[in-house]
Amino acid sequence: MALAATRVRLHGSPHRKPAPRLVALALAALVLVSLAGFVTAPGRAAESEQAILAVVNDEPISAYDVNQRVAMLMLSGAGGDVNAKLRAELKSKGINDRFRAFALKYKPQSQAEVEALQKRFIEMLRQQAMASVKPGLRDQALADLVADRVKLQEAKRLNLTVTEDEVGSVIANLARGNKMTEQQFADMLKSRGINIRAFRERIRVQIAWRRVLGRRFFSQVSVAQSEIDAAVSASSVGEEGAEGAGELLNVSRVTFSMRGRVDEARMAAQYSVAEQLSASAKGCDGLQAGARRLEGARFEALRKVAVADIPDAARPLVANAEVGQVTAPILTPSGIEVYAVCSREAASGEGSAAQRKDAESKLEMQKMEALSKGLISELCASAVIEFRQGVKPKRRCSIE
Image 1: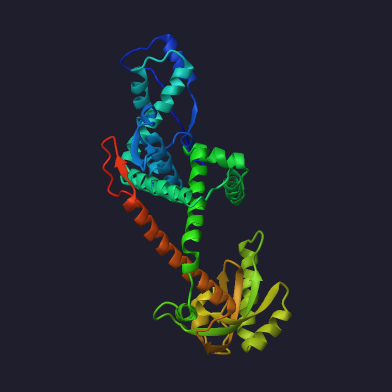
Image 2: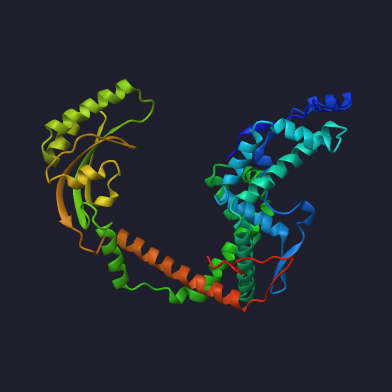
C-alpha cells in the first residue's frame, strides 16, 4: 500500500548565504518523495551487502540475502511500525533544516546530486527508524534463511526439483489474488525493497519443502476415526460456558438486503417493516408467511446450524431465544435480519460429512506441521553452520 508522500526541500542557511548556483539548484529540487520507494531492506550499506554472514554446509548466506528476507518479513507485517516512524519523522518540525544541513556538507552542484542526497537522507532516517523497531528482525531473517538452506539441501538429496514454471505459476496466482498483473506485483515488491528473484527463491523453498514432507511422511500422516469424532464433538461444544454450546438449531431467517446506496430514510423505513414482521409473525411458519407478502424480503430455512455459525450480531438473541420465538430485527453486514427458532437438538458429535472432512484435514495438517518441525530440527542439528562477521544470532535455525 502506497505510503503518504512528503516534500523535502533544500533551503539556504540563515547564517551563511550559499552560492546563487546552489540556491537555484536547491529551489529546483522540489521533488515529491514517495516513502514506498525508499523503505527498502534494512541492513548494512549497499557496498557491504555481499559480505557473508553465515555458511550452511558450504552454502553462503550474504548480508543481501538477510536484508531481502527482512523486507519480506516487514511486508508480511513484522516491523510494520518502521514506515509509521519514518512518515512521522519526515513530517516533523525542522525536517527541511535538517536536510539542508545534511546536504550542504556535500556541496551538491546539480539537481541530480540534490535528488541523490534526498534519497541518502531518507535512507539514513529509515535506518534510524529500523534500529528502534523490532531489533530481533535480522536474527529472525537469518534463522529463516539457515532453515531454507537445509530444506533445499534435503530436497536436492531426495532428487526433488522445482521448475521455474512452477514458481511462476505461484507468482501469477499471488498477483491475481492481489488484483495485479505480474509486472505490477513485481513493481510492488520492488517499492518495498524486495527483488523479485529473492521472492521467487522463497517460493521455491516452500514448494520444495512440501515435496520433501510428502516424500518423507505421506504414509505416516493418518487420522483415526476416533480422533475425528473427538474433534467434531469439541467443535460442536464451542467455547466453554458459551450460550447454546453443544446444540444445533433449526432456524428461519428473513433478510432485508441493504445493498447499494443506503440513506438514513431508507434504512429507517426498512427497519420499520422488519419490526412489524417481527411483532406479527408467530413462529417459523408465521415468519415465512409474512416474508412472502413483503417486497425485498428473502426467506431461508437453516437446518442444524451451530450457534457459533450464527452471525456475530445475531448470535446472542438467537442463542437465548425460546423455540417458536421470533427475534427483534438485527442489523448485520448482510442487511436487516429477523430470526425464528424452530427447534433445538443436541449435537451428536458425529457431525456432517463436510464437518468431518474439515476436521480430518485440520488434524492431518497439525500432524504434518509437527513432523515438519521435527525434521527441520534434525537437519539443522546435523548441519555444519558457521556464522561470520561477528554475527551471534539468538537462534541458529528457525523450525517454524
